[in-house]
Image 1 (tube, rainbow, N blue to C red):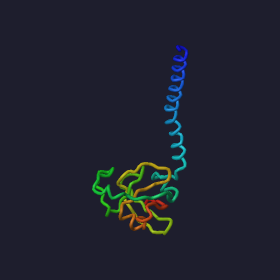
Image 2 (cartoon, rainbow, N blue to C red):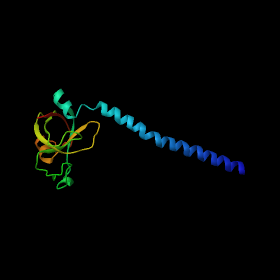
Image 3 (tube, rainbow, N blue to C red):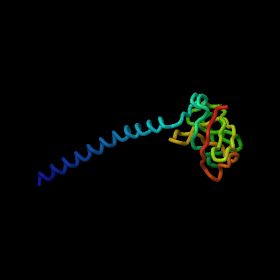
Image 4 (spheres, rainbow, N blue to C red):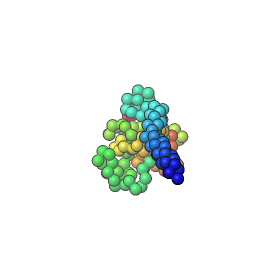
Length: 147
């Protein structure tokens, strides 16, 4: 009976150590995956947008629940203003957003941050999305050019 108890403890310790190794190495593996997806991103910082003539990616727009909330720049989000969120462009940067599906374009001012994603590069205000005919689609492929 005592040997079974020792085996049970040994199996449990082995299992616990395996789980702890996995838990400690998964974030490292996730970081590697994120790094490779960041490398795959078309340049979305200001220098890359100016030098290459623009960057392509996916655009979305703000949900209604953000109306009246503070943005990263401290401004209050208003759906009727031509503003947008970008992961790393400087605040106040004016960007021309060209919808690749229909050719429509708008100029928006960056006043907020959005989290970095593999392909999404900008979140537009409601009015900017309306002018691009994005409201019913929800997402569209766009090209960004700094004005």
